[in-house]
Length: 244
Image 1 (cartoon, rainbow, N blue to C red):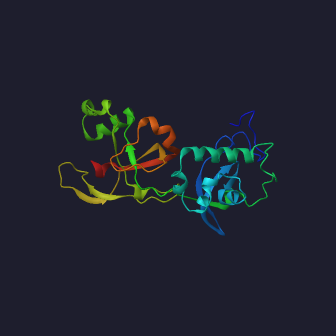
Image 2 (tube, one colour):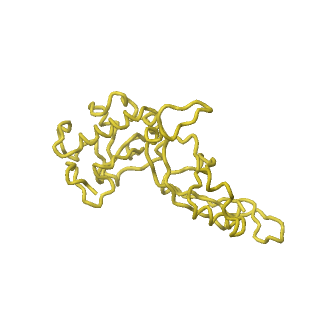
Image 3 (cartoon, rainbow, N blue to C red):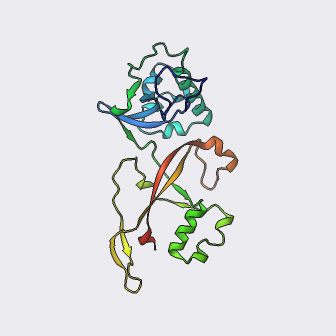
């Protein structure tokens, strides 16, 4: 909900998902323009490329928001991310000193209904953490008996493994049900077919940014607050009968 102190000259109601306190980043395109970087406020997408042209955003971001992914921006220091958010808040706040014309009739603001959203980044790698005890127990019972659902080491280390980065897609994309080797009859030989037990899990996904670390050089937990660029909701799909 919007703060009683910080308000925007862009009008929206109290149930809005993108008040001035929530400055997201993404990639969008319109019918007449290619994909580029944007933000959001109220019911509008903020064209960061247009806003950059009038000198509102930090100098370090010059030319970055013309691109069709956030990778270059994510690769900058976290202090630049903060300065960019602060610049956006200053521009769109009620009583702004930088917004000369406080009107939604501008190329900077585009109604959400007129844009198409794209995957925000080129995702080079994807690590899936197995962190919910309830979920791990339920899945464990699919492969083992209830008594041995959790492996002994589960409570002692954060289980993480590689996911398939190439199959991460933006919301609304049709999903093809996977095929694989199945064994519906445990007393018969496996058969090849379409997955009949497609499981999906609602998860939180975090984008890691900043200077790329060298191979074999881990990012410390103490650095997480300066490395987490943002988060999204993610559906994680699993072909349980193929896995089994």
